[in-house]
Length: 507
Image (cartoon, rainbow, N blue to C red; front, side, top):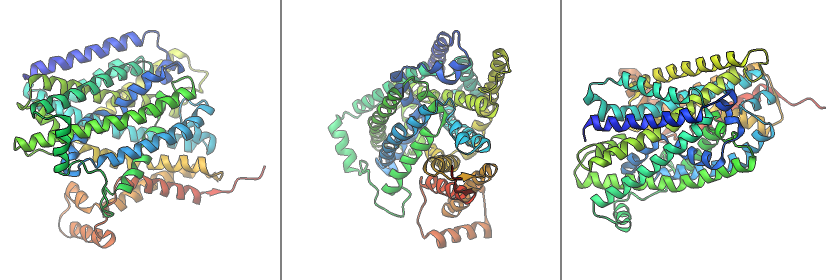
């Protein structure tokens, strides 16, 4: 299909989002922006959060993993399911009991102001890197298959997309994205199902035959029993659970939507509905990946990773309509994660860093101007980070995102765990140094464990490269650390906080 025609569909989709944003942001206030006036419908929030949880990375990267790892990613999904129960019955009751707008207020109440701002800072770093990595993946697909042919540069593409996201989140914030995320999730899931049907028809296979062929090729395997592998099932399930607890339960963006629901019981319904839905949706993504793998083999295509789905969908292998479905579904997968992250970081910075919610002296008009300035500033930061991911350019961006989560969410995990499960008092001024030291220690450990990757990315040669590779083999003997690096980081933070703590004074 002509790139101009595809671009026209993309532009029309943007106009629809802007229309929804205009309607939902009428008479919006700061409370509307931050927590949707605490009046969001839990069913809309639950459905919209499916899109936020999946993102364009799931849409492109998860199908691309089937060729090399079969359905092994589902081990992580099972871990996600466990993590959502912890959020529903441990974290949400805490947040509602404290009537929080920012979940990091818990850290202030428990430890002090420095801990509170440290938690907010790590959230901002985490979401900036995670959201922009997801954005990079989708923008790169649009660039390679549409915009390069129109003579539009990657820089201009990133700028325009961020500008459009900025436009429809500028006023309404959470009040708007609850509705736009619902719309976008509908398009994404509809596109996913249509893609599966089209490819099955193209290959003249039914569902039973599809699974039979996938099973014969060894692609339906889920459980990895290799203890040394980064994909070992205990690592994946446990890592998946903690990723959900941190990337959802300790994440202001995700919890901002949950606590915008009026009652705790409805917020819990939201989380459990989301958990169950993701079990089904991820099976569909893996099924799609299996179909794409079989299709590539049948047509003698040497494709893998993030290249698999876009190349088949936008090449001359399927119908022109399939290209449109893929592009709209891909953009629909991008925006719920990008718009929510931009809004949540604005909220966190205004409330947590600037203390806007406590400020009774500044007028509402001036607060609004500050909020809009912060929102614009984060959009610029997003733009710079997306350009930065051009350097990494990994073939499976989902691995990069999970790796980054291990570094940046680990301190949040350690801080919240120490606050919830101990009664010890910490030296608040020292907390930020513990939270900075822990990821640095983990980085050193990871550089030794994954020496080959770091040697390649850093361009190391000679004695330095050989020394790293030798040390890796001597220390780990082939054992690979996977997504459990998040747990290691959290434990280091917890241990560090214990060292700067003391028993509480007797009342």
